[in-house]
Amino acid sequence: MMAEYIASKALGGACPRAERGRKGDVVDMKKGKRLRAGDTIGIAAPSGPVKLEALEKGISVLQSMGFIVREASNLRSQWGYLAGHDAERAAGLMELFADDRVDGILCAKGGYGASRMAGFIDLDVIRANPKVFVGYSDVTTLHLLFNQGAELITFHGPMAVSDMARDIGDFTESSFARCVMDGHSGPLDNPEGASL
Image: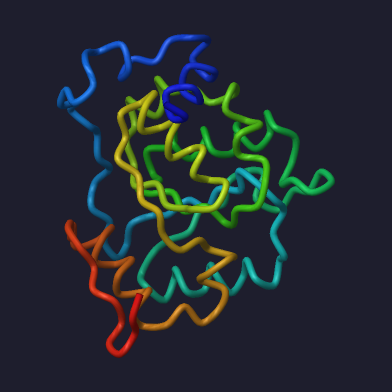
């Protein structure tokens, strides 16, 4: 229900997935291509501003994994507790989706603000340019919007500043690679010796 509500707000009352049929109908979801070393990952900032030192560390980790990094136009912006005005943050994200050179998009961090930019998102652009999209926290709003409004498969996973700038460890890095690079689907095992 919440996902349909968010999508309907962003779409001016229309939610293509919800209007397609009864609950339980199979929907043909779009999926970005599997990422590989040499591909370009765009770093988006849909929420709060980034600490520049942490950003540089996160970029370094992505580069060590073999990725080329492209920054959203607002990535280094700050407007109060946000990485730019709502329209500016949305424009930065939309530029990454529209750019043919960008193969996947990784959010910098969560916090607050992603839901505020939903009305500025062009779902037709996302639908026409499906890409791996990774993030969590308040970025979940965008996961729901892209899933319901653009039928895009997205990934809850580590973010460039919140996670990759720290020592994310071999387990998280390999799980990330398995999902977005190797195409792994299904359950992921806990790290050895860890319990739920």
